[in-house]
Length: 167
Length: 75
Image 1 (cartoon, each protein chain N blue to C red):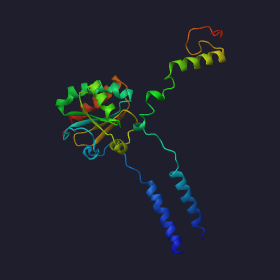
Image 2 (tube, rainbow over the protein chains, first blue to last red):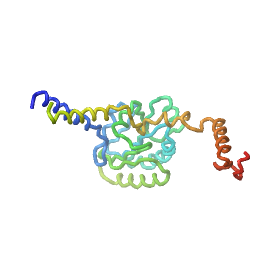
Image 3 (cartoon, chains in turn orange, green):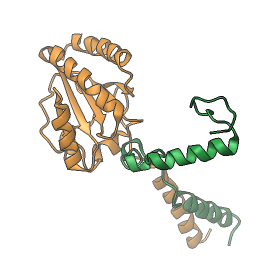
Image 4 (cartoon, each protein chain N blue to C red):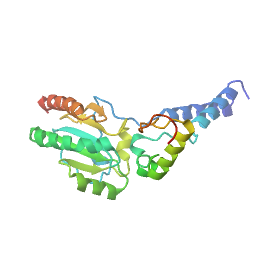
């Protein structure tokens, strides 16, 4: 085989390998990426040893809006037991994000992923989607969509189980 | 050119054509524009009324979309 042929074959397989490389989305049972590395707008709370519900939302998403009072109530009820809700907005426009927060006044921390780096890495399957992270920082549950009381009941049961685990 | 190279080149150009096409899936977090009010088909009440009226007249089915009527087409 000539040198040119070898080079073409090498190029072919290199391109195939490159095409197969995809950005890895997060998997249940794996550590969740460090939120501090995604240049999020806003102040992140210290989540060391805490159970975290990371909720991806947007101002244009009606079910996201519906979920806010429920997550606020959960934060208020379970916050002292080591539970933290963090809302991650995927809005690109800062003014829309700010106006929404002013109107809704959520009882939990929210940050904005304006560059959509985190959400692109996580690859949320839909809006809203929340990620339950245990006290060790391991992703334990991915919950997509919000259906009111049934979603809250389901999430609450899982959160209470995670809170019983030791750090 | 050898027998191996031709199919490989075909596959290569095929793969390039496939992956470099202009098609793009709108991701869930990129739907802000699609969810905005101007994207709604019923954003103009007058326009919607006119379209509905034409539909009823053409189909002779007044009330066909939940509006009160007997279906006489005399609307």
